[in-house]
Image (cartoon, rainbow, N blue to C red; front, side, top):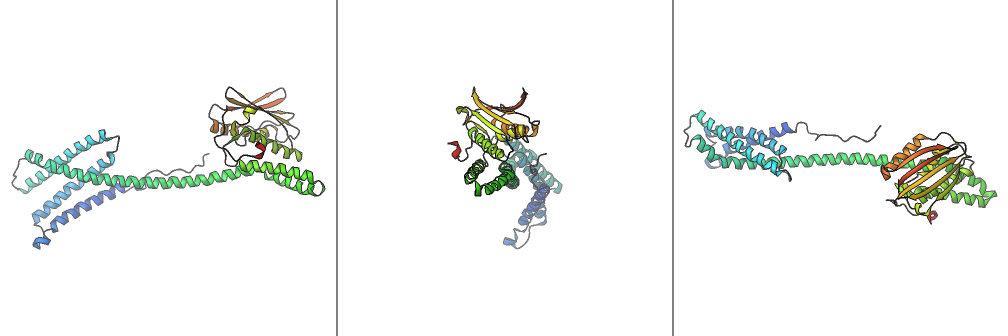
Length: 366
């Protein structure tokens, strides 16, 4: 089951449309009140009742038109690459808005019984430029509001993604610590330190040799910590050091390496060989493991063979190694389990290339 935290969807403002409509109505109301009260500064009185009604009627006409224009600004925001689609839409909308505004004003004047200086077609042609200018003005505000909301939405989304990323980083760190603990094998380390303490008084040379072997193992683990890929030489050295400590405690197995020179620098996932060897012989100290590696036609071929009595192979470990190999080397890589003539072998095939990431060089690598 995936443990990746979900990224919340939506902009987090379900009532933004209603709030925006309320702000538009309030803005046009303030606009009408301004023009009604504007004569106070010059004449000391408010606008005439007919003028006040006309201002309110204009505001009532343009408020729904503004809401429609804002909606068009959101649907057709004049972005680069879409101008060929958006510009004609806004030109047609400007003409339609001009027609609606002029028709509304004409109907209002007819309802009030005011004489008309121009016929309806003349008035429509006369007011189209002013209404188009108003359309462009309102459209500019609508685009500014839309871009502002888009910027805020992206900021919230970036914050959510940053939160998810921080959670993933914490999980990766925890997984790396768990992997490092598993590679360090505390039980083996503690048992070796206890053996060193027992050997030191009576066999200092053996204690020193065991200490050096343990130090090499720990250094290889820490030097490869966080690296996705390491040279085959380093992974084979870790397998040898691990097997040497296991043999000292009577846990085996015997490991023999047969690696051609051109294969030593090839990239493999960090800690690939040791889990495969464990999958073949874990629990049987008398087992023998033979590791062969060669390069054939640009392909690195590694064969891990176990001889002697051994339990059934750990298929879960093989599946985990197969998944890691495909992540690092792609679908052309493969791991196969083969059994024949009393022996069991794991065949690893992957493209031969140098590691993309290099850990610090080890003394054991020369």
